[in-house]
Image (cartoon, rainbow, N blue to C red; front, side, top):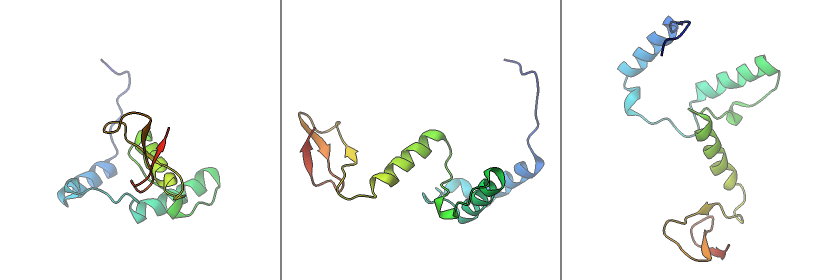
Length: 109
């Protein structure tokens, strides 16, 4: 497939990526909470772009919408200990197929 336009990557971005790889970033998983510097910059961007004040703690950098949705779901599901948040149908069968928040309670579904 041929593209009508070819856009070269930013030199700054390419150099930063090479430097990060040379410093061993490829062997590390990022913290699920995100990098503090990235969260801070995301907060500043949101303020500049849509004029909304959002604390850096509220910014969750993700690699894609599916990861973001899943991470948000997991985070929100842990806000109330009384709610069930995990369903494991792979090893349970029948009407009792939901595992409670801490893996101890089973309820009919």
